[in-house]
Amino acid sequence: MLIRRPADILSSEITAPAVYRERRRFIAQAGSLALAAALPAGPAHAGIGPLTPSPLSTTEPPTSRKAVTTYNNFYELGTDKADPAENTHRLKPAPWTLRIEGLVNKPRSFGIDELLRLAPLEERIYRMRCVEGWSMVIPWVGIPLATLLKQVDPQGSAKYVEFVSHYDRATMTRGVLDWPYLEGLRLDEARHPLTILALGLYGDVLPVQNGAPVRLVVPWKYGFKGGKSLVAIRLVDKQPTTSWMKAGPSEYGFYANVNPEVEHPRWSQATERRIGEFTKRKTLMFNGYTDQVAPMYAGMDLRRYF
Ligand code: MTE
Image (cartoon, rainbow, N blue to C red; front, side, top):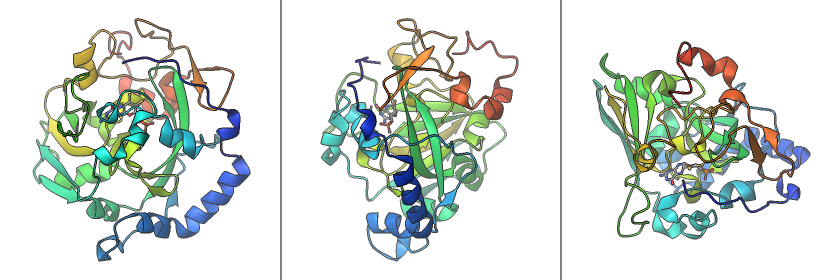
């Protein structure tokens, strides 16, 4: 990854907990309206329910909305952190369809309104840790990926899931990576209850720079696993080669689990800087989600499978 030192973001940019609690009360009562208002009008969106708070959320204070929406990695829209928010016109998030295909008995495409109706929309406040050494706490809005996978009935031979991002050569970055941006998970990781497809954040529809209209969120892995603006999800029998694995196989592994003990070849992963904080914190194994996810990796040498 093209590493740059994160520009310092002031601690005053972290949303004060009281303000955030107030906002959550609003979301609980009117989340459906907020999301519906931000989506194209029409009966297709009439079925959005209120946001369900999730026991899987962290109680840590979320990073400011400003930082979450202006400090982004989305190379198709530029390689500087500020570029994606400035280049949102290069991606049109509607109309949109997401295809689920490959080793499934019922392949099909979903419109965003269909995804919104699949399951109650949950607010999931997750710690997110980037491989570059910074972290955020983000209040996502989404549905479990497992819910979507159930709809297409995966075949027994499906072992992995490949995630394909939208790419338009005419409007997006050329070079840098092998496009489209590809990510992958093992099928059990994809079905894990923590894994979600995000359709929003901070109670609103997902901003383009964060991966509108639908992106993957896997909180125990480095941020690059969360493919943005997904157009296809493919169930496959072999481990997919992801864009970052192609770009630097010794630096970016398939698993990419947050692990303070496995160094990136060019820097340590032992600590991180939470955006908005001054002092560094220790990075936690699996980004603090050990209890939930460690059993999936029992017996694996995590130095080898990084
Ligand atoms: N998805 C696409 N399509 N293109 C990208 O460049 N960057 C990844 C990931 N998903 C990326 C992507 C990286 S490196 C990170 S850290 C996260 O998106 C950042 O997500 P955020 O901007 O919503 O915090």
